[in-house]
Amino acid sequence: MKKLFGTDGIRAVAGQPPLDQTTVYAIGLALAKSLGEAPRILIGQDTRESSDWIAATLTSGLTQGGATVESAGVITTPAIAFLTAKHGFAAGIVISASHNPWEDNGIKLFGPDGYKLPDVTELRIEDEIFRQLAAKTAVADHSAPPSINESDRAEYIQFLLASVPGLSLDNQRIVIDCANGAASAVAPQLFADLGGEVIITHASPNGRNINEHCGALHPKVVAEEVVKHKASMGITFDGDADRALFADEHGNVVNGDAVLLLAARDLQARGLLAHSTVVATTMSNMGLEAALKRSEIKMLRAPVGDKYVLEQMQSMGASLGGEQSGHIIFTGRSTTGDGLLTGLLLLDILHRAGKSLAELLADLKTFPQVILNVKVREKKPLETIPSVAEAIAAAEEALADSGRVVIRYSGTEALARVMIEAESEPLMRLHAEAIAGAIRAEIGI
Image: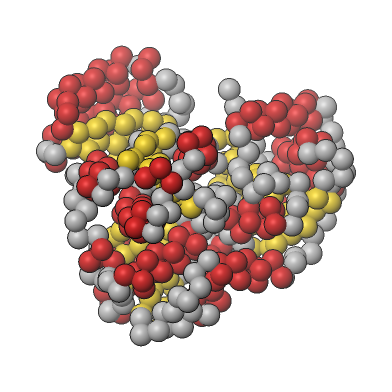
């Protein structure tokens, strides 16, 4: 079992294990030794105030281990995946904690093909990290991060624009929420090249305001801005812009399930939806499944985590997959979720259809769904906790064929997530609160 890597790299409070200086340096050494002789490695980062020193310490370890390190500076996670694969780097590293608060940070890894590393590779790297820590190698004095290649950002923007040839936002007003994160360094220039009136918000990062009352964690913020400015649509990103959520012209939040529906129907109509199948996750709403079925599209469910969605997509040759949270993967276009790319492709669908977002989603009827997050002090198997297991069993029996119960631990935070959807909203909330209460009583903080 992995001890450092979660579902999206290594993530913790910056300055505390495993993101203390000693461990970060060991991670750099371990990565360099795991990637062959004299590997070239690309680093990018988000806007957290800890990202600079983590990049410097990690670079010191990588260099000490024989690697050559280049930096793209503040840039999105999918940009690093793209640039790593295009320019033949041995690995790409992103220093980011995505949607987490500013105090946290993380280290995400991409292989030379631009894909996130499989679990077996992460386990091997973990073993090397622990060997380096056991050796008690002194942390070498670290200098500033390597100089930034300013052309990386421009190259990524050109890739994005090339994905939607002919797209124009003329006569449209769009609101963009950059979450004071990595999108702040890319989105303003990207959307400036598409015409129309683009209103950029939350693009003034100060190291501590990333995701703070803005971005994909707070989609109602961009929805309110859409109504305020009488815009045709809103797009909001998380801290590293690997996912995006939307708002329609009426100020309704549009999540990843809805994006999957529109993208699947568009690809199906053009004969581009492989196997007429979409890969979603256990968290996706039953309403999405029903809407796809009406369009003769099959939906498969993968475990939560975009890397697991991608694994299932690759195993059966699917061309579209994603998560309710806004990670959408278009194989052939990207190797990971890309919020900016998703935003452009959705705009392109609307442009070609000549319809608004609300019009295209008029037939999507979602089941009432609630997700409760419970902070936990440990991630003990839930089935081994009698009171929790009993509450879950009671919910499953009561809902039977009229709902779903999904209880899981977050792969990136110390949280238990309780998700229930059902035709009966009162019954849904009753059982969600009962399960959350049982977890809180046994292992809650």
